Length: 242
Image (tube, rainbow, N blue to C red; front, side, top):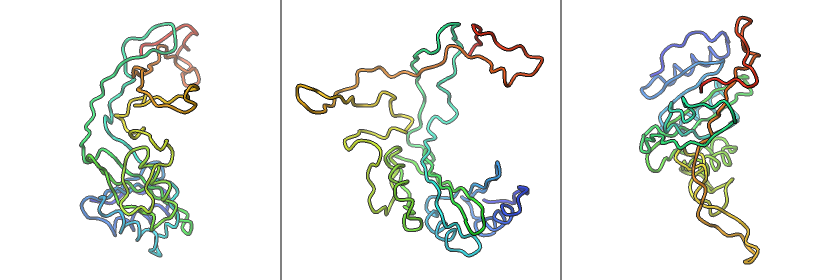
């Protein structure tokens, strides 16, 4: 539920926050302010009617969709870069990491929309969560036509489906690509290796032979630009534990 927000210091954003709070104070809606921007989180089933109001209402007038992207929150907060074993030489090493993923979390994925009101010169970020084995949300192509390729990109990279999209197909990966490469459970080495075979005079697909690994830096040096006058800068050969 949206509660009153403290002043952002920007009269335009404060007026927008008041308007959003007045309109959408039901359960499932949440409004946050950070770094001079407002973020409205809303239930997936409310996305389309809310977007239609944000664009058409004379007091809001978010005429442009600047960007749309997907986010995978699986293993959120877990770091595969943490290590207590650092060497004093070299710049990287491969390690195997087992990250615990909650694949069926109903809030595993988020779709994020960045809106711009030209008339009122203000921005708004929308966020809605989807999850399960087949994440799906309504398409907003009918509200902002620029969402067409953005939604195709989110489908291609994250496997998020957009109900009502006029032509939902891959846009960045190959036609026969397996999986969705921006998902946290997608292996860094991929599923299939592709190469050109001169004997067959064509491209062939083969199983991947590279072992999945994560590169973790061996040497971590303090940047002298961010040290105080009382702190000694790290020497060229020095290293700190990661």
